[in-house]
Each structure stands twice: as C-alpha cells, then as structure tokens.
Image (cartoon, rainbow, N blue to C red; front, side):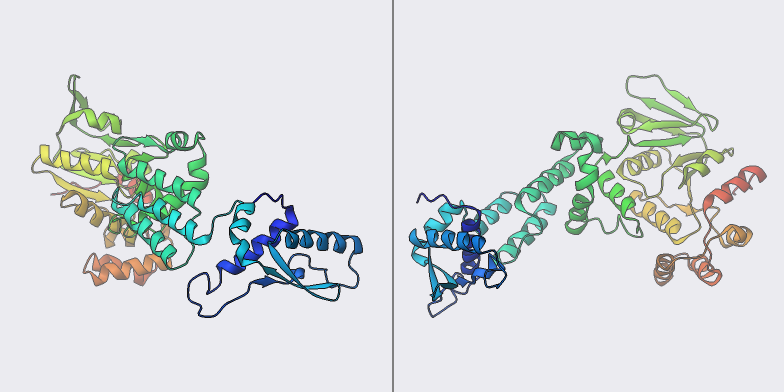
Length: 414
C-alpha cells in the first residue's frame, strides 16, 4: 500500500502495533476478540488541554483523519473531539508495510536463526547463544541488540581460535578498522562473555581486580595489550632454532618474546634452584649465586606455564621456589603455579618470620584478603601464615623483603 505517512502518523501506527504485539491475541492466548486503541494524548499530550495551540490541534486531527480515510485506523469521537484511536486489524499488513517494520514473531524467528548459526563453533559461543535463544523463546529481550551481538560473537570467535600472539590494537583494527575501539567499548563485554560461559574458574581463582581478570582471560588466548615478554636471568644456556647456543648469567637479564619462545629448543639451567618472582622490582633486585630467576608478573599465562614445564622437563632434579607478596594472593599464585605446571613449588621469603620482621612496612588486610585467607585455612593451606596475617591484620609487599635480602645476602638453602 502506498501511503506517505508523516512523523506523527508513523508514531500513531507504531503505538497501535506495539499495543497489538503486546496483547494476548497476538500471542494466541486470547479466546475473545480484542480491539487495540490508544488515546490521542498519548501522541499529543496537550490535546485535551484548554490552553492548547488551536492550530496544532487542527493539524493533528487532520493527520488522524488522513489515516482514517486510508482505512488504517478508526476514530471514536464525542461531538467534534476525538476520544479514541483504534487500529483497523484488517489493515495490519499495510501498517507494517508503511512503517517498513516486521512483526515481532518474524523478528524473533530471525534472531533465533542468527544465534543458531553460531552453535557448534565453540562451547563458549554455545553457552552464550543458547541463553539468548532461550530468552527469545520466553518472550524476553536478548542481552544485546543483534548488530552488537554480531560484533561480540565475531570478536569472541577470533579470540578463541587465535593461536599466535595478537595485540589488542591489532585485533581492533582487524575487526573494526579502529585501533582503540576494542579497548574503549568491547574488551570488558567480551571478557564478561568468556568468563561466564567458559571454563576459567580455576584460572581466575583469587583474582578480584577486573582489569587483571581481563588480562588473564585474553592472555590465555594469546591476546595482549602489549607484546608479552618473559624475563629471565641466571646461569643457563639457551639454544634457539638456527642459532648458536647463548650463555646467560645473573648479571645479564633477558626478555624473551612469545615468538622467541616458540624458537627456543632447549634451556639448560646451571643452578640447582629456580625462583619465580611476582613483581618486577624484586626480580631486578635478586642476584644471588646458585639461582635461576623468572619474572611472572602476577598470575601467569599459558606462555609462562609452557616455559616452566619445558625447564622442568629438560632439567631434572631442580628445586622450585616462588617469591611473592606476603598476602593471600601471593600464596594463591603458588597454588596456581602447582596446578597449572605440575611442578612442586615452595614459598620462599614468605614465612611468618618475614611478617614479624617487616611488620612496620605492612598494610591492613582488606575484606577480600580476609575472605581469601579464611578459604585457604579451610583448605588446610598455609594455615600458620594465614592465621598470623588475620591476627596481625597485616600484609606485606615483597619489594621491601627483596630490598633487604639483596643488601644482607640471604642465607643459602640446604
């Protein structure tokens, strides 16, 4: 039907169709005939006002009369005053055509088909799309508009299928032609989907900071905000593919990119002990004989895990230690290391003696710290340390410990 509806007329038809689509009749649940109407003031608020602009009222009534003459609506009047605007149900197809609008059931079917197209591609997408389909079937809105959902699903699939180091800005350019849009608008949404529908509970155990969670989640799939490097130092010989062996010492720290690690064929550790370190300041401080050091930067990702496992496989008999902050997170990192690498790490410089010695440099425990400490106690992990922290209401950052240790030279471990 050709009918050039103006803005007001389109609004009238839209409101009437909304009324129709929200009805029991549309849902097939009504046993009696319904009529669908709106009051004129739902379009023109001042229609019944004694102070309304007469010319404005006249134009409004002419627009309604035009819809009536076209057979799209019926007007119910009292005298000259319009009391009710009723939808002409026989003209429903014409109303949809004039507005260029699809009825809700058609839209729902199209949306379900959209989400079904992603099923079977990845368990994370299965979970997300399955929930959106269930929402639609229950008559509820999806979590995101379809266009937005399409962008998020494309991003998730790219991240989940990624097998090489990919920087966030590179990902953003590939997806949007804008190097900053992923960080500004999509990073948090994508990570929320990954965390909710993926199997990352153990990976994120003990991590509360949202930005750190996002870094861990994306890093697990090789996506980083900046190039990912592993910092190492100590007596060792590194053999890279197509290169002569490289000797390393505690005086010569080395930063290895993910690409370099892919070319690393052998790493021979020439010390009896290995220490992983949580913070960069402490990594730079530690230079003791008989140790090989690795900087983990808090919770470690798959790149660092693979390197640790390779060292353990190629160097039997090493003693493994972790040096981190004297707080519940520091001990949770040890548990995470043990679980993800299969290596029997032991804490070092993280005992009750250190807490007593450096008590004056400590900070009070926060509620999250107390909760995590109690959880570790319940699991029978580091009970003495956790109880002491709770009793003293104190946690220590490792930088003060490594500074004193580097000055005083810590005692050799038997």
